[in-house]
Length: 163
Ligand code: HEM
Image 1 (tube, rainbow, N blue to C red):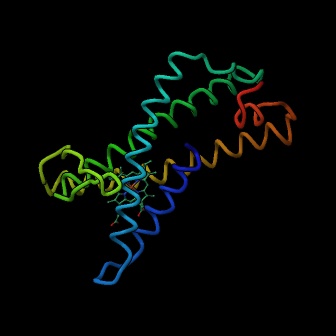
Image 2: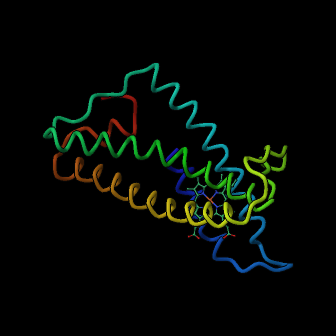
């Protein structure tokens, strides 16, 4: 999921920076961005069901404050994994733009076209995209700290099922 979300982020950013025009790849990039991000929304639902049925490994043996920050960071990641696709989907709907899944079928509109909602949701999607980037970088830096400074098995447990 991490790899997919980072790829969706990069494609969304490149797509938004690409000028539009008849021969521009902008539309293709944005369509790939939307389709793959909708898959993220479906995967996060599966992931939440899995997590509810299978207890995650206990957090590291750091101080109570460190464990609180780690737990809060994990829930923030879940919140963003839901909020990013939903704000993107609602943004496209409010602008009257279709949301297709890999060209296979079109998803229902979340909102009727509405200029005020469109500008609010666009701002929200863009702002949350940067919040997501900061949280992902923090998450990666914390994992590297466990590996290089604490020298424990937290990074290994993030990469495999064994602890
Ligand atoms: C994990 C989910 C998602 C992530 C991480 C993500 C991330 C991003 C990022 C980084 C940008 C560029 C922001 C900027 O210009 O500052 C962007 C733009 C955009 N996203 Fe998403 N996004 C996600 C889901 C979605 C979904 C589900 C849709 C629609 C169905 C969507 C529609 C768009 C659109 C239309 C743009 C703007 C393109 C433009 O400027 O023309 N996004 N997204």
